[in-house]
Length: 84
Image (cartoon, rainbow, N blue to C red; front, side):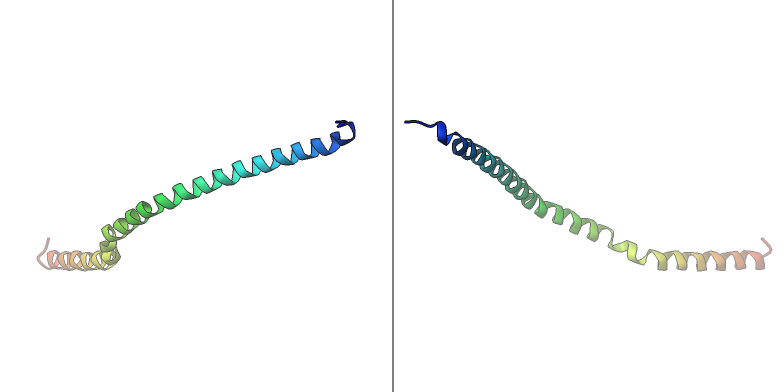
């Protein structure tokens, strides 16, 4: 067989095959990474839920501070009336 006239086609097929293989490797890598992220998402969500539960009490912190300041002001007035 004489492949001298077909060398351009052969080179094109080889280049095309290499490009397809590179794309397949990249897609498989992306899918593997997405799978790992998906597996970790559950534990991340659990951690965030726990953090939300642990910090829920901070929502009333401004009210607590305001109450403490009112008590401190009352104590200062009482001390001033007692001459201290």
